[in-house]
Length: 278
Image (cartoon, rainbow, N blue to C red; front, side):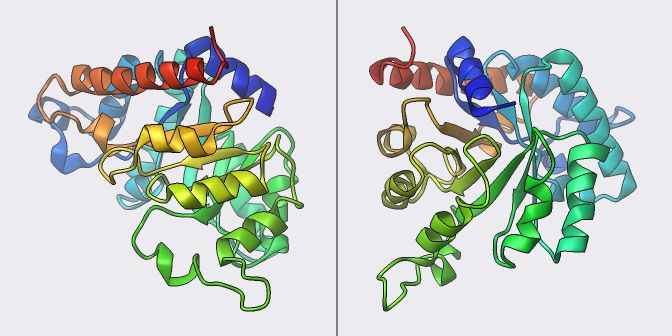
């Protein structure tokens, strides 16, 4: 899937919504807990309710790895189900991998080939040779961490180089953008940092940005659009808990659809204001 393909999907659905499939079993209704595979059944109902409104799904791998092989089996089945339900949806493994080259080759193979994802989040800390194996796999996306939405982001990401005056995240984006292209590399930039989002867009005007932090973490969708939209939209805005756990009753899927629909409708207005859809 190229950037043009993704933009076409955004125009078709009038949405740049990415839904994080981060299922918290403590929030499941009893009816789901009684099934053979509660995580898979929960995900199925979320996908059934929201796939027409989203252009991407992003499972956070920690929610599956934490329960062992059974959790990874739930993940495999979820990926397979999404592929059948809506083959054009982008699937992002939020795995935050990054290791020496030989290990990264295995991580890339795991998420792109074994599990069949279109994209994977990667840490840039170990440099180009740790990222290159992901980029070398054709027709896949590497989503590089740049500005995260957590409070600890300030510990390192906003440090300034005394000679250049650049923040560390700016150097990461500037250098790493030369490793890939707008068709195989995105950058994570948190919605809770609109000024940083604007700066990221200045450095990489043509790349897609994956933006977490809208919803529970307090990021503003309007601010994200103001600072991050480009002439191909260039944004995937992720919402996880605010959508999938909008309600904890047996009608959780209907509540998820309502929340996703509200976000999608707001996105359609923003796209129309930008002249990207009619």
